[in-house]
Image (cartoon, rainbow, N blue to C red):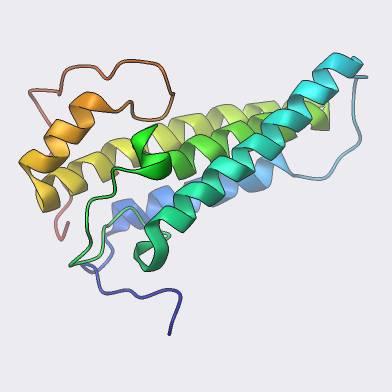
Length: 174
């Protein structure tokens, strides 16, 4: 079978823009250049651990989605709400893993540009998670609302905030 199936709503410009910004920020983390400072060993070991751990978490999230995995935040039609495995720890384990791994990579690069790109990536993933939360609320309703009340968005151990009363309006076609 096909790995990627685009049976969700037609991607809107906002979702595509978020994906493009995410890819650009990740590219910025890995942009070539010589290190500008020397990392202490403990910092290098910690950054390497973040890089590995983040990849493990992202992979667990991707495997948990199986055939529902998509590059865009739109859930596929007929998808089931995942609340176990990595999704029982955080609502967006792929984004959390990407942030951890990118943090490790940016620190290991030992230059300012990857750290700036990391800040951009954090902002983009925040927007993408917010948009995806809205789309999942539309698709799964009260079941998603209850899940979102129990499970933190991206950072494990941080209790989820009460659901926002005012939601941004979804783009047309979402």
